[in-house]
Image (tube, rainbow over all chains, first blue to last red; front, side):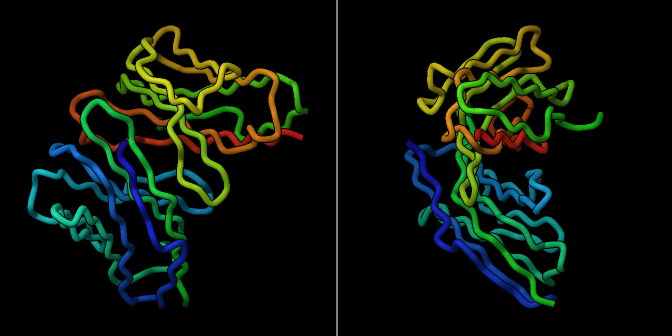
Length: 113
Length: 115
């Protein structure tokens, strides 16, 4: 079974600084997708960024970017110019075609003003 | 489209009672998923539907849990004879079926407290 591991239960970052959240996953599939979701205190999960495994280029969405290392099965999220509104739980998730999303346990990000 | 809607937002029930939650997905999404999330944990998959067909159920979904999506639109999740261990946030999500690359759109969840 596929597993997703987030080894940092909590992280903090100063406002305007950069932070990187780690994620590793385990799979024997070659075709899959990786996601980062944000869950603010209001509890609604929001998709931040996604990456197709067959694409070598790392995905970028404004201040959010990923470092996808397929051989190492690593998928980290970098948040640049951190803002107070970035404070939330961040979940890394994996999905292969025909299977439901599998989530990690999450990393709680605090942003210090 | 207002996104994925879940009702109620909060439910407090006594142990042993039955509860039912409702999820209205995004109208053009043919896949609907139920997840359970306990405090400090990531969401855990329970079951999912493609249209009205229930395609997969997790072993987490005991016999006391049942989910339906009768007309391929909204879905209900019923828990019978609730136990304190059922206290959690129940999340619903929907997506398009094509490929695996679509992320899910989540609702705000139903928080269940069993007392």
